[in-house]
Image 1 (cartoon, one colour):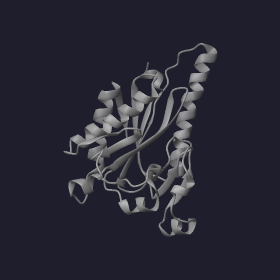
Image 2 (cartoon, rainbow, N blue to C red):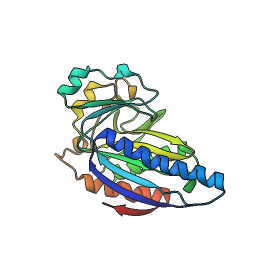
Image 3 (cartoon, one colour):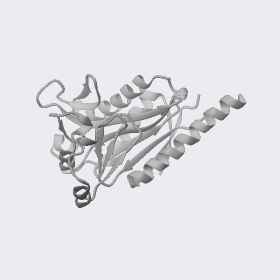
Image 4 (tube, rainbow, N blue to C red):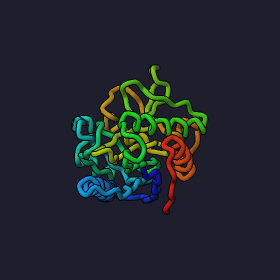
Amino acid sequence: MNKEVEVRYLGVKDYKETWDYQEALFKNTLDLKIKNRREETNIPTKNYFLFVEHPHVYTLGKSGDAENLLISEKELQEKNATFYKINRGGDITYHGPGQIVGYPILDLDNFFTDIHKYLRLLEEMVILTLAEYGLKAERSPGETGVWLDVGTPFARKICAMGVRASRWVTMHGFALNVNADLGYFDNIIPCGIKGKAVTSMNVELGRKEISLEEVEGKLLKHFKSLFEAELIENA
């Protein structure tokens, strides 16, 4: 079992380029697992954790409803936004500047073979990070992701999640609103859930801007602890 996780900071990167990059790492790991099984070898598989910030983009999961995108192709262009149907779980979400997007590409055979546990630990990583800023975040029953004021009329989502897994290898991940422009969420029904708001860390804390690097560091600290991982950081 290889618990080393290589952390890669991709900076600001186009969504489709990043998706292709994820797919390549994902395929390499799958191919190695298949080769190990076929040839009865035991070459360790690699694990990655990608951090990225995307230009404005809307993505629709394989079980999502395209009608949850509320604007036309022309309006997308006017807002300098793109739209992709992708192969993760979940419905529609938005990615953009000021948002931390994390893509763990893990071989769960190196950790535990339980997708439910994987999602809960990703949520816990975010919950523990937000607690360091004095924000009481929690899960909402039946709704993947991280929320504030669950069970009240003021419930609002601060982190969306959607993953894909094959042979226990994961891709896609989470999007945490740190300094995100929340106006872009008005153009969709986020995650297909009507009547619930979206928020970000800077709004909740009444601050103009929060350091993305600082938040990434806290996320990694909790990821390392929860997954009992050894982190290898590459800029």
